[in-house]
Amino acid sequence: MEIDTHQRIDQRLCGKPLQVEAGFSRVALRATEDMAADPSGLVHGGFIFGLADYAAMIAVNHPHVVLGAADVAFLKPVSVGEMVTAEATADPPSGKKRPVRVTVFRDETEVFRGTFTCFVLDRHVLA
Image 1 (cartoon, helix red, strand yellow):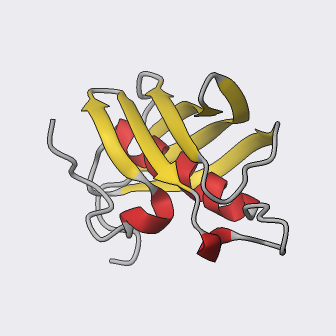
Image 2 (cartoon, one colour):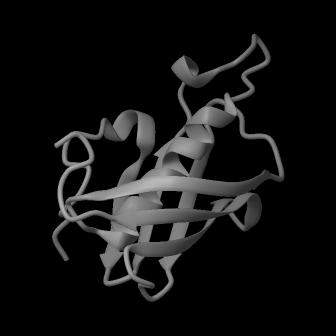
């Protein structure tokens, strides 16, 4: 399935799509040194959130999808060099609203989970 949203995302920062289906996506991200928050190699949570957000957007896969809210939990730390994978499942639409459940894994370990409230707009949010 072709990706119809977030065409200019830098996949080095937000992840590379591995699987895109109607209402579902799987996106992988290798944590790099540029993502480190401190000398120990702890990855800043914003990069994990960005991965999850990108997975949510392409699970909805509409040119005018935007994030309205997120309820998330960071469950385990991620370190530089690790590969994490986000899986996003979009609920059926309710008007313009599309709730999306996202889980991020490092191997079999769940490191992040959240519900992203996405909205599909009639036109671009900046229009």
